[in-house]
Image (tube, rainbow, N blue to C red):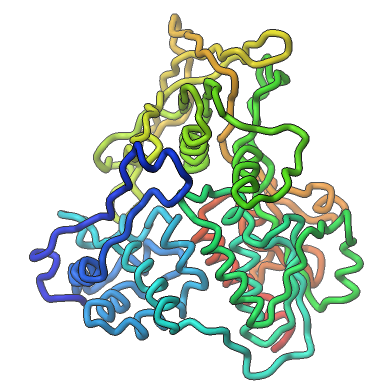
Length: 475
């Protein structure tokens, strides 16, 4: 694939970031784009590797990566687009927010630099929109069967997209004002601008998908209402139950969950009315973000742009190694130190730290009492148990704390409980091999079933769930 020996002739080139002092003043994308000629050179680096682990192991969607790289190298953009869309419903999302699991499994990366697959994917889908290759399509025939999807995030949108193209009548219900779920409300504009999301939603509407926004199942309409009007129902509400930090001082004002914080900022950017009486903002405050994942990084970047006086980041896990360790050998996703754009913007994360107490005065947060921990390791060298190091306590001044420690299970627990849905040991909704719950005709997809995960995995799960629904309805 690509150019014979291209990986030896051309070096890997990553897109640059906009200058720090420029980008922290706005919410436009941090990442710049490579030129078309640069993308073609990067595609030329794809090896004829025999066993392409990038898609057979690395990509949850099993994107046919070597072949679309070859099409790009040869200038066959339409063919590259057709191949990409055959496995990925929304490349414009994954190419912007996916951590590129495929690149970690690239054969060229064993002894050198992997191919810039994510950038090539982004170029293919954007070339498709710019060139008019992507147009609204209709199924050959409409079937007299309908499906309700509860949740308009990446997995719910995928199920809707697949079923609509198969001919079913699809209606998506969501309590938010606009479709997109985490893509619209949880990811900041500097990573994923919302016109990208709306472009896809509008295309789906033109193709026949109905979006009923501002409608909460269990509040505005009942499950029985849906059951009586649709042949199948799919729950796609995501993992919305945040992990809390139940320590002394948790009730102080100024402590917020990451998603609540990010949702408000995205609503401000879209000029949507806030759905809370409290205005959550970091402006002129000292902020501490607890958690070192993607949401934590998004909170850091948002706080900086809101005008925080100072931003800290605390992470309970130990600092990862700079190079791939033996515990995550190729082609596994390596546990290595990854610096995000937010760290370049002035935030230095502190690892192996626990928060023991929130400190306050007159009901408001004033600081955190923390300590360093050491991690016990197993035989494979993996960290297992944190143990506080004696004499390492320290205080952090803070007027605002953001909890970005992940999620424990699906939201809307009242609905889940009222339907008597079976749960697994982690609190996620159980499903059979066809992704149907213990309630006949009721399916579940994405993070509600598999737990908190990546957008690319939500899309992959949505495609499988759509297949289960099609089999159930007997197309």
